[in-house]
Image (cartoon, rainbow, N blue to C red):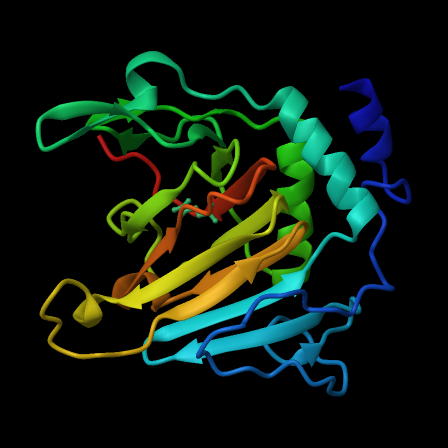
Length: 260
Ligand SMILES: O=C(O)CCC(=O)C(=O)O
């Protein structure tokens, strides 16, 4: 922990801006619109290289608006990953189990939540409070805020021990999210496939046939899922049995303050 705090100081490894990184990484290998050509520097995600030297890739489809970049270069991403492995405390017991059609199963990954004091959210039908922020999560949150101009008060941490761990198709609970707010997804560890499927293109007899948007989320990457993506598209992280290495994903959100 001390090591992390020291490195978090401005100008140290944790605080340093990664000027040299321009590669957008392996995202956007699917049917999405791609726009990774370098353009004159502009502020904010979604338009080539920004003023921090980050190369953004636009991912667009009907009702889908995402931006992808490699936010942390390898050395910093490695250090953050190690710190997350040391510091994050995951749910155990009933919170690590889920009921599907009346039968209880272990959640096929580990989960934890951190956030601002006083917030509550619902999880597995329970009203819970997130744990208080720890420095490594604040560090990643603040870097995302710096490069996107967005603020976040909550993070869901998902840890996938290997390619057997996964998350099924879902949308994030919009009732708890601030209307129109983006979700910032930051990944560390194994590079994994990540799919978006339009809500009208699900099931055996879909009403429409829009293509699946397939991405790969690399070590140190940031995927901004902007409004209205979460309204129209489901997302998932499928099983990949050949992947042996762990992955930790952080989804930063702005959730509404608890109402009495
Ligand atoms: O691990 C991921 O990339 C996806 C996490 C996710 O779907 C979620 O937090 O809602």
